Image (cartoon, rainbow, N blue to C red; front, side, top):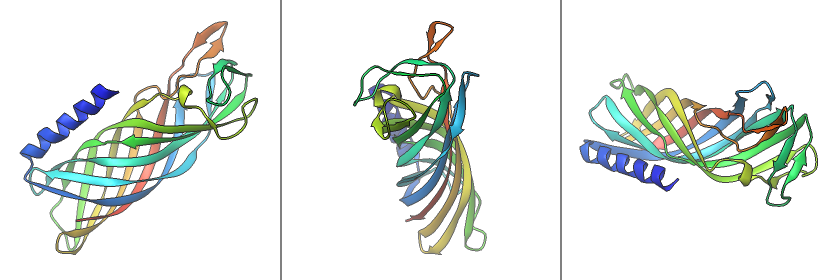
Length: 227
């Protein structure tokens, strides 16, 4: 995980050297997230409504193009139903808990995200600047709790079953509304699609242990202020 963090910091530093100006601010965002399994043995059993907040930063190459990054804290999760039994579901409270077939696990996780994207902006039209952006979303696990339908109860610590690093790509767009001077109101919608396996859960499929791929997806609406 350290090598990912070092790579991100080097990329941000390199871009900041080339940029013509830097803008930043604060935002809050409601988030709807869900988990998408790549297996017929695991099914989506629910979404999670959470929130995020953070600091957006734009390194502006010109009036219309920027490298966009920042840091945010995001609540993510969703529910999965496992058709096969889970031999060893590790929790901090109960080690090596066996979960029976058709168990539902509700994942309640929090991640620190450092998005890296390119952003294209229009000239200001009236008081509004429109923009589109796209890039990658490295995420580092902060905490992981879970509700389990059998054996382990509710709100147990399941960080041993959630990977510490997650990667996705994102696309989004929105507006910046001028409030006077350099101050702007930010309204932005972002869809994030997972690329890497989110969990470490191993199910017993025909007598063989398998960690089948499950990704995390989310939609967020960012509301903030830029300076």
